[in-house]
Length: 91
Image (tube, rainbow, N blue to C red):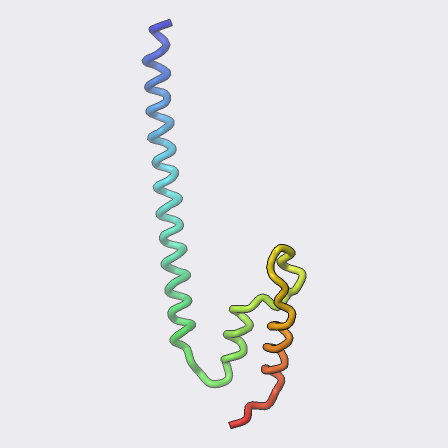
Protein backbone atom coordinates (compact mmCIF):
# COMPACT_ATOMS: atom_id res chain seq x y z
CA UNK A 1 0.00 0.00 0.00
CA UNK A 2 2.85 2.39 0.61
CA UNK A 3 3.78 2.32 -3.06
CA UNK A 4 0.50 4.06 -3.98
CA UNK A 5 0.78 6.93 -1.50
CA UNK A 6 3.46 8.92 -3.38
CA UNK A 7 1.35 8.70 -6.54
CA UNK A 8 -1.68 10.08 -4.69
CA UNK A 9 0.41 12.97 -3.36
CA UNK A 10 1.74 13.75 -6.83
CA UNK A 11 -1.77 13.64 -8.24
CA UNK A 12 -3.01 16.00 -5.52
CA UNK A 13 -0.18 18.43 -6.21
CA UNK A 14 -0.92 18.33 -9.93
CA UNK A 15 -4.64 18.93 -9.32
CA UNK A 16 -3.85 21.85 -7.01
CA UNK A 17 -1.55 23.38 -9.63
CA UNK A 18 -4.30 23.04 -12.26
CA UNK A 19 -6.84 24.56 -9.88
CA UNK A 20 -4.56 27.52 -9.16
CA UNK A 21 -3.98 27.99 -12.89
CA UNK A 22 -7.75 28.02 -13.54
CA UNK A 23 -8.30 30.42 -10.64
CA UNK A 24 -5.59 32.74 -11.96
CA UNK A 25 -7.07 32.63 -15.46
CA UNK A 26 -10.54 33.41 -14.08
CA UNK A 27 -9.11 36.26 -12.00
CA UNK A 28 -7.39 37.75 -15.06
CA UNK A 29 -10.64 37.55 -17.06
CA UNK A 30 -12.57 39.20 -14.23
CA UNK A 31 -10.00 41.98 -13.96
CA UNK A 32 -10.14 42.60 -17.71
CA UNK A 33 -13.95 42.67 -17.68
CA UNK A 34 -13.99 45.05 -14.71
CA UNK A 35 -11.48 47.38 -16.38
CA UNK A 36 -13.56 47.44 -19.58
CA UNK A 37 -16.76 48.09 -17.62
CA UNK A 38 -15.07 50.86 -15.63
CA UNK A 39 -13.76 52.50 -18.80
CA UNK A 40 -17.21 52.36 -20.40
CA UNK A 41 -18.78 53.80 -17.24
CA UNK A 42 -16.25 56.65 -17.06
CA UNK A 43 -16.76 57.45 -20.75
CA UNK A 44 -20.52 57.44 -20.23
CA UNK A 45 -20.29 59.72 -17.18
CA UNK A 46 -18.08 62.19 -19.00
CA UNK A 47 -20.53 62.37 -21.91
CA UNK A 48 -22.86 65.21 -20.99
CA UNK A 49 -24.55 66.26 -24.18
CA UNK A 50 -27.93 67.99 -23.78
CA UNK A 51 -30.93 65.76 -24.36
CA UNK A 52 -29.31 62.50 -23.31
CA UNK A 53 -30.14 62.72 -19.61
CA UNK A 54 -33.19 60.45 -19.76
CA UNK A 55 -31.37 57.85 -21.82
CA UNK A 56 -28.72 57.72 -19.10
CA UNK A 57 -31.40 57.39 -16.40
CA UNK A 58 -33.11 54.61 -18.36
CA UNK A 59 -29.83 52.66 -18.65
CA UNK A 60 -29.28 52.85 -14.89
CA UNK A 61 -32.87 51.95 -13.91
CA UNK A 62 -34.71 48.71 -14.44
CA UNK A 63 -38.15 49.68 -15.72
CA UNK A 64 -39.35 46.11 -16.13
CA UNK A 65 -41.38 45.33 -12.98
CA UNK A 66 -41.45 41.59 -13.66
CA UNK A 67 -37.68 41.12 -14.01
CA UNK A 68 -36.84 40.93 -10.33
CA UNK A 69 -39.22 39.08 -8.04
CA UNK A 70 -37.13 39.37 -4.86
CA UNK A 71 -36.29 43.07 -5.12
CA UNK A 72 -38.08 45.84 -3.29
CA UNK A 73 -41.18 47.38 -4.79
CA UNK A 74 -39.95 50.36 -6.80
CA UNK A 75 -43.14 51.04 -8.73
CA UNK A 76 -43.63 54.42 -7.04
CA UNK A 77 -40.10 55.53 -7.95
CA UNK A 78 -40.61 54.25 -11.49
CA UNK A 79 -43.85 56.22 -11.86
CA UNK A 80 -42.20 59.37 -10.50
CA UNK A 81 -39.32 59.08 -12.97
CA UNK A 82 -41.70 58.50 -15.87
CA UNK A 83 -43.86 61.48 -14.87
CA UNK A 84 -40.74 63.66 -14.55
CA UNK A 85 -39.61 62.56 -18.00
CA UNK A 86 -42.99 63.47 -19.48
CA UNK A 87 -43.24 66.82 -17.66
CA UNK A 88 -42.04 69.93 -19.39
CA UNK A 89 -38.76 71.33 -18.16
CA UNK A 90 -39.43 74.66 -16.42
CA UNK A 91 -36.53 77.05 -16.00
